Image 1 (tube, rainbow over the protein chains, first blue to last red):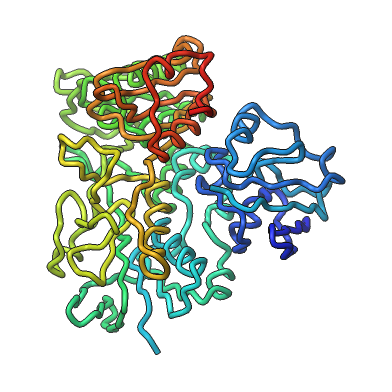
Image 2 (image 1 turned 60 degrees about the vertical axis):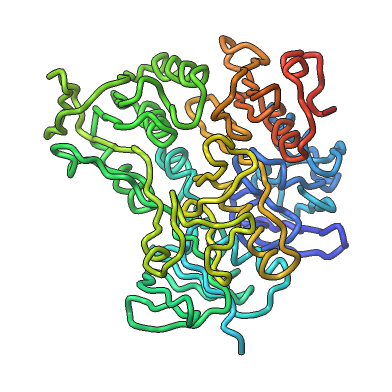
Amino acid sequence: MPKVTYIAHTGESQTIDVPAGYSVMEGAVRNGVDGIVAECGGACMCATCHVFVDEAFLAKLPPIGEEQEEMLNATAVARRPNSRLSCQIPAIAALDGLIVRMPERQT
Amino acid sequence: MSAGVVIIGGGQAGAEAASALRAQGYEKPILLIGDENQAPYQRPPLSKAYLMGTLDAERLPLRAESLYDKQHIELLLGQTVVDIAAPLQRIRLRSGSVLPYEHLILATGARNRLLQIKGSERALYLRTLPDADTIRERLASATSVAVIGGGFIGLEIAAAARKLGKQVCVIEAAPRLMARAVSPLLSDFFRDAHEKEGVEILLATGIEEIEDAAIRFTDGSRRAAEVVLAGIGVVPNVELARAAGLAVGNGIAVDEFLITSDPNIFAIGDCAEFPCVFANARAGGRVRLESVQNAVDQAKCVARGIEGTPEPYRDPPWFWTDQYNYRFQMAGLSNGHDETIVRGDAASGKFTAFYFKDKRFIAADSVNRFADHIAARKILGSGTKLTPEQAGDEAFDLKRV
């Protein structure tokens, strides 16, 4: 199972084995990682699972779809170049060791 | 030791209430009682990806089961509460056990309204995971499907069945689709969308009987239907509350803090009728909403009420439905609007209808216009003003409001 490390804005960090194929958001929500809200349950509807992806992994991410593109402009904390919605990042072998940082707030 | 919080109902509202209480720092016991055998799971995919077989059952649970242990949330599954003794702050389970509570949260949800026509025992309904499994199994061997009810669930099922290659007919008693929740503009758009995909839509149509493998209409005509699915609305589960002497309207009646007529009992989610600032005041301003947003936000509101600073429930309603490649997102409640302004072009499949009442912005329906939807939610939530002129002007940036 790919490992994903979630770092809160306070610096607190948790590493979780996320089953392959699940999203990075699902890995967080199912295991009670604070800082990812995912109001819509992963339907790319709410922009409350916003994360900043560690630069080392950016090139390995899937391209940003049109929907995510628009939703990223609606996040509570302003978008940066490495912003993604974690519901749109699949936990796959190529992303093993992925590090994401959570913004200060999601709503 | 305190009796803590007891939550009746293991749907999304109940599960979110438990999590939200812990997130608020609540340290007393939390007991979550659900009458289904599964730990709380997501229902929205049941009529979409799960029905089409593109999402596995393992991905439906809202939380990993280990998280309930970690957060000291006790799950009591497959159990039914038969009685609330409000003055004594106790509940009784079917098993006979009597359990005390300090605060009780009713998240009892709703159940499907059942057809009352000849042959209705042949119809299938969708609410739970086992329901979805039955439908999947039956669809697998069928070629023709009739969907009774042109609301959100019915249309999502129709879209899924069509994608699975079935011959699909949707039968709606009202003269237009999703009539209870959306404007004629959107009803017409989705009628076209379904017809283009090859679904037959029959409006203002009465059914005489569900036969063995067909539907017979009041005019005597028939449509083949090896599988009949019904999505004709729900009935809130209020019986427990009513028997306990709580006030009940079109749902368990609560105030703006989601407190029932008993100060120790809250009601949230599909079962609760609450005063809503976004609702049509002429219709009494009280609503009962069936949505993920309402379940989640009301859960959080109650958690703040129990542990934290109570605040009235003021979250703007939002909702979504996926049908084919259309994502239809609603913000606010459009009932009672007197003016509609469209941004974008319905013919292109990407547009938003903004609804106004007395020039006041009250709701927006977006089809594949994600940014409009998010902006509309923010505008409604903050109470800022959006004029019809601004809504209709593509050059006007809604995020600036």
